[in-house]
Every structure is written in structure tokens, then in C-alpha cells.
Amino acid sequence: MLTHSFQHIPGIGAKTERQLWEAGIPDWAGFSKAENPTNLSPKQRETIKAYIEASHHHLAANNPKFFLDLLPPDRHWCVFPEFRASIAYLDIETTGLSHWDSDITTIALYDGTAIRYYVRGQNLEDFLHDIQAYSVIVTYNGKTFDVPFIEGYFRTKLTQGHIDLRYVLKSLGYGGGLKSCEKALGLDRGDLDGVDGYFAVLLWQDYQRNRNEKALETLLAYNIEDVVNLETLMVLAYNMKMAQMPFLPSRPLPMPKAPEIPFQADPATLARIKKQVFYSPDAYHYRQ
Image 1: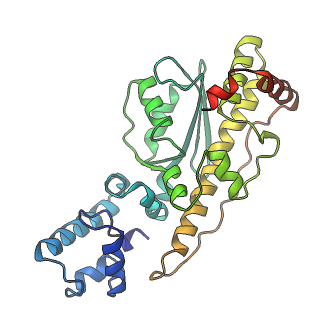
Image 2: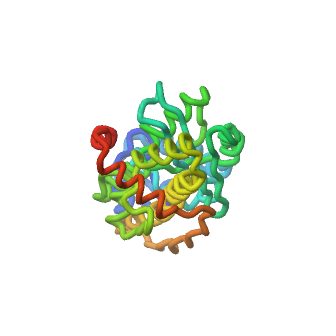
């Protein structure tokens, strides 16, 4: 899809892009061969040609950030197939919502094959080394939460291109949090249904205060399921977006096969903390 896209070029929005497609210019190569059926000014044509040349270069150099920095956030899906092998699905859990007085407790990474996880007090710092193997990260609401939190916590800057599925899914009519989108799109979390970010805080507290290893395992199962589901949501979003492109052939990507998650939720721990959540006066305020 990326070579059919023109919206990363300054001055080209959705309307002009569609006009190019309707004029028989479906991709970058088509523009280079075409006359001027859309009545673009000479300056506009030169700008487009220059960006197409740069686009070929960055695509060949495996540099998705060039495109992701220029495309509108709800159009980031179009880089997915070309850079899928360079993607890490990323999610963090924390002790609270504030970037200034809260800590990261766990981080989960998934690249479509390998699952990696990091735990505060064990191997959290290894994340900074491992993330360098990827040129794109995919999150849900990561632009406002996960990435700023990571950058503040580690005092570093993540240089990868970033696809935040919150914007892509919202443009498809799926709003709210990650779990709401999952439910609307038919994803079932089984034993972890109803577990959310506030619940994850309580799991960490239980692990810290009571040395309950089952609480940590449940937290990691939850965190890892987040990133595994992000791949499924990415493929679903891409296929739905492609189906909306009437001037392009729609070739749906096959749905990914979920990997075996190395941890399982502990029913006894879940039941006890669900009772705690039900009676906690702080639960509502945290979730806001």
C-alpha cells in the first residue's frame, strides 16, 4: 500500500490523493509517467517528484520513520506490510499514571515471533538494548502514555517510527481503550477479561508486598497478551482500511496465529484482587 500513498508529501491530503487515483495515477511510478491530468502547478509537480524520489530511497533503506513522521497518524497503517519484519509491539505497566512519581513495573515486546518481557528489579534495563533491533514500534495510546513514560523513566529518546493504533482504530469507528476495541472486534481475553491498568497496579502491589509470584505471573500474562493482541488489531485495521480503497486492489492479509504466552493468570489471585477492586474507593478515580 505504501507505494500507492501520496499523503506523506507536503500539500497532498486525502482529497488530492483520491483525485490522483481517479485520474489513473495509482502509485509513485504512475505519477512519474503521467502528464498533468489533475492540473497541478509546476511547483507542486516538482515537489511531488522530489518526495517520490526520496520515498524510493527511504523504502530501499528500510527507513519507516521518514514516512511515519510525514503521514497523518490515522494513515500510519499503510506502512505496515513493507516494514512488518521491523516491528515491535510494545506495552508497559506502571505503578500509576504520572510520569513524574510513578515507575515502570513491566514491559512486554512482541515482534510476531518472539516474546520478550522485562520486570522492574530483574531485567528492566535490558529493554533499551533489545528495542534497538526494531525500526517501528506499534502501541495503543503509546504516543501519550507508553513512549513518554519510557523516555522519562530511562532518560532517553526512542528513535523508532511509531504507529499508535488508537488513531487508526478511531478513524475506523472504534474508540475508547484497548480493551473496548478488542471486544468490539471480537477478541476474547478469557480468564483475563475485566483486568485493566488499575488491576495491573494492584497485581504489582500484591507481588511486592506479599512476594506472591502468582501475581507477577498474572501481570506478565496480562501485559504480554496486550502486545500479542496488538498484532491482531494491526492486521484487522490494515485489512479494513484496504477494503475502503475503491481504486486499489484489496488483498487482505491473513490473520496472525497467536503464540503461546509463557505465563498464565492465577484464578485465586484474580478473584482476590477483583474483590479488592470492587471495594476500592480509588478504582474509579484511577481509571479516569
